[in-house]
Length: 205
Image (cartoon, rainbow, N blue to C red; front, top):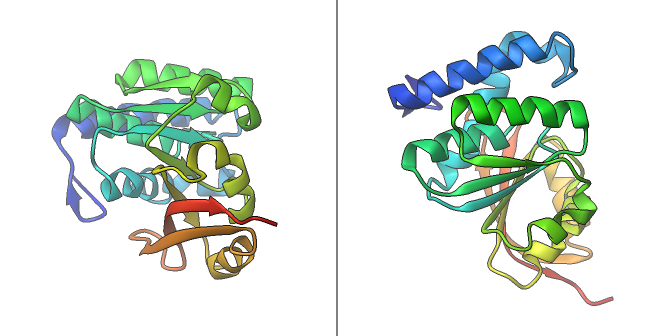
């Protein structure tokens, strides 16, 4: 099996297929993603999310914010199961979605845990991490405020999915934040990117 042009092992493929089956079952009663994108589950959500791990395929400690239907958090956790290291802390305050995520992790053997709490309190429970991910959650400036306790003047990197308006979000965020930026063109969506941020520092007022 290939995802984004990269080979995926049979074990990981089976885990992803099991997750997809669970997702489609739960999505009939819970709004996990926009209904209009359900028919493109593999391309729009699974393959798109897989790019995050493929950009940093090491046994890292991740925090995934606003995990929703499991993208990219559960997908990252499934890939980590193959290498037998690393962990994903999925932060999702919606109790119904958190219940789905708990089942998805348990049945796929993915390396992750669910924190059904608000993002603002997450650092009390998860004081440190190596990497942060978020998809379709908020504008970049807001994401940097959410993640400040993990990133400000630390070595933690962040990976954020963004659409065609990403350049305006970056310009706005630089008003209050300094950071190094690598733009990865999406292998799935022509107008989308994944922004990799490091050396994140809050500018003094």
